[in-house]
Image 1 (cartoon, rainbow, N blue to C red):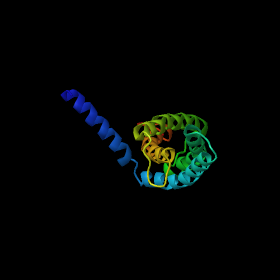
Image 2 (image 1 turned 135 degrees about the vertical axis):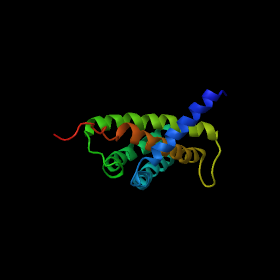
Image 3 (image 1 turned 90 degrees about the vertical axis):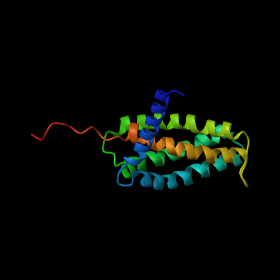
Length: 158
C-alpha cells in the first residue's frame, strides 16, 4: 500500500469515528435505546418467519421492514431530534436503510458460510451478525444522510 493510500484509509477511519463522536448529547446511546424496540420487533418477525418456513432473505427483509417503521419514527424525533420535512427524510431513510440491508445481511451470511452459534440455526446466526453490521452502518448513514441538521446560516438576524 502506498503512503497516499494509507492516508486515505486513515482519513476514512477518522471520518467514521467522527460520525460517532460528533453526535453530541448521547445520540448514539439514544440510537441504541431505539434499537432495543427495533430488536424486539425485528427479531420477533425474523425468527417467527424462519420457524414458519420463510427463506433467510424473506425473513430478514420482513424483520427489517417492520423495524424500519419503529426506527424512522423514534430515531427522527428522539435520537436525532429532526425538525425538517418528513417526506424527503422518509425517502432518504428508505433508500439508506435498504442500502444498509443489502450491505450487511448478505455479507454476514456469506462471511459465516454456514457456521452456527450455539442454540441457533445458520440463518439465525447470520441474522444476528448481519444486525450488528447493519446497526453501525445505519447509525452513520442516518446521522449523515437522513436526519442531518441544516447548515447554519452565516447571515445574522435581521
